[in-house]
Length: 317
Image (cartoon, rainbow, N blue to C red; front, side, top):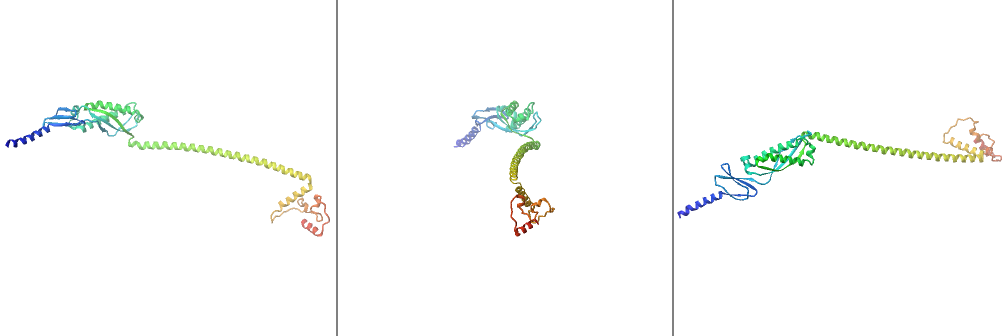
C-alpha cells in the first residue's frame, strides 16, 4: 500500500516530464531549440520533437510568406519632380538560424524594422538614379524598377536570413505642398482649352453670320432688281397705253389728265389753292357761256337751258 502511495506521484511527475520534453512542429512554422540562448536543434519539418525539460526552450517562427508595408517616403527622380511613394514587400524567413543570430530576441518585429530600413534605402537609390524620371515611375517601366529594388533589397536582407520575394509600389503621389500648384496648373490648362474652344466657336459663328448677311443682301438685291424690272416694264406699258390714248383722241386725253390733276389737288376738306384766275390749270372752268365738255373735246352741244347755264356759271366761279 505504501508503494502505491509513492508510485502514483512518481508516475505523475514522470508523465509531466515526458510531456514537457515533447513539442509539435506545425507545417506553417520553423522551430529552434535553445539551451541557455544557444541553438541546439533546428526543426523545419512538421512532426514531433524532443527537448530537455526546463533546460531547453522552443522558439517558433512563421515559415509562411509575410507582408511588410513600408511608410511613405519622398523621392526625387532625375527630373527633380518630387514624389511620395508608398511601397510594400513580401518576404519569408529563409535561414532560421541566421535569422535568430541577426535579430536575437527581437524576433519578427526587429527584423521588419531593419527590412523596412533596407527597402526605404534601396527605393530611394533606384528611383533617384540617373535616367529615372517621374514619367518612368508612372509608366509601365515601373515594373523593371520594382525588380531592381527587390534584387538590391535581397542582397542586403540576406544577412538577416530573409528572402525578399517581391516588392511593389502601391501609390505614387505628389507632396502636399505641390498639390495646390499642380491643381492650379491643371485648372489653367483647362481654362485655356475652354477659351480656345470658345474662340473657335465665335469664329465659326461669325462665319455663319457673315454668310447669312451676304445671302440676305444678295436676295434683297435680286428682289429689288426684279421689282425694278417689273416696275419699269409696268411704267413702259402704262406709257404705251397713255401714248395710244393720246394718239386716238388728244383732246379727251388732255381732259382726262386735267380731271385727274383736279382730283389729286382738291383732296381733303380744307384744301386751299393760291393761283391766278387766268391760270391754265383751270382752263376747263373758264367761259360762262361754253360747255365744259363740248369746247375742248369736240362733243356737240345744244343751247343750254337756264338751269344748265346757272350750273356752268357756278362751276366757273
